[in-house]
Length: 412
Ligand SMILES: [Zn+2]
Image (tube, rainbow, N blue to C red):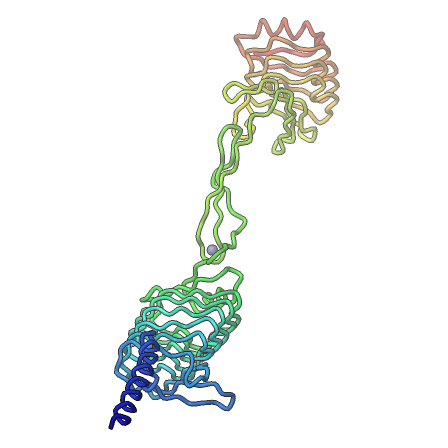
C-alpha cells in the first residue's frame, strides 16, 4: 500500500508539474487549441478550418502541434458569434469565405506577412468598422469585403496592384477609400453602392489609375499627396507698388490655391519704357508712385497723326508726360498732325525737324517753357499751330524765337 500511495503521490506530483506547465501556456492569451479544427497540408503547414468554442474573443495560435499556422479557412463559420479575432504573424493567407457572414466580428488584425485575401473572405461582416490592410498584401479577391455595411474607410497598401470585382460592393457606409499608384485595375462593380448618398470619395494621386477610374465612374475624387495645378489665372496684376494675385486650380480635385505675384517696384530714373500699344518709347525722368514723370523719346513713325498723351501708365502707376525728347520724331515724313498733351513743358531740339508733311500742330499744354533748337525746322511751309487762347501771346513769342517760317501761322 505504501508503494501504491507513493506511486499515486508521484503521479499527482507529475500531474501538478504538467498542469503547472499547461497553466503557464494557458496564461498566454491563446484560445484552447482543442476549440479549433485544422487541416495539415503536405508541406507541414496548418490551416485553421473551424472554431467550435464559445468565446467572443479568440486568439489563433501560431503553431499547432509544432506546425506553423499559415492560413485561415473558416468556411464552416457562417454566422459565427465571435467579436474579436487576433491572428498570429505566421498567417500568409485569408482563405476564400474565411469569415463570410461573421456578423458579430468587430475587430480583427491582419498581420504583416499576409499576401492574399480570398474571395468573399469578409463578405457580410456587417459589424466590421475598420480593418487595416497590411503592406505585404498583394491580392484582394472578388467580393472580399462585400456587404461590410459598417466599414467607413479603407486604405489600400501600395503592395496591391488590383482590386477585384465587387470587392466593396454593398459597403453602404464606406465614404473614403485611399488607393495607391500601384493599383492599375479595379474590377467591375467594385464600389457599386449608393455612392451619391454616402459621399463616397476616392483618395489618390492625380496621375494615378484610381483618378481615371473615379472620373470614368462619376465618383468624387480627392488628391492625396500632390495636386496637378493648372497654369493659373491672374486675378489682379502686380503693380509697381502692390502685389498681384494668381489663382491655380487642381485639374484633378478642383481645389484652388492663391499665389502672390510680387509687386514690380518703381522703375529707376532714366529707365526706358517701350509702350507696345502705341509703339512709342518713354524715359523715366522722375520715379515716384504719386508724381512721376516721363519723356517721350520715340514715336510710331507709321502714323500720320500722333498725340503726345497727358499721362502714361507703367505697372499700374500714372506718369505725366512732361517732355518730348530731342529728335523724337525727326525726319518723320508720314507725320501730318501732332497733338501736344497738356503736361508737356519741354520740346527738345530737332524733335520735329524735317517732318515736311506736318501741317497741323495742336498744343493743349499751357505749361511749355522750353523749345529746343530747330524743333520745327523743315515742317510744311503753311503749317498751322493751334495754341490755347490764354497762351496765344506768350507762345507766339516762344515759337517764333525758334525761327519758324513766316508762312507758318499760330492760331488760337
Ligand atoms: Zn488636387
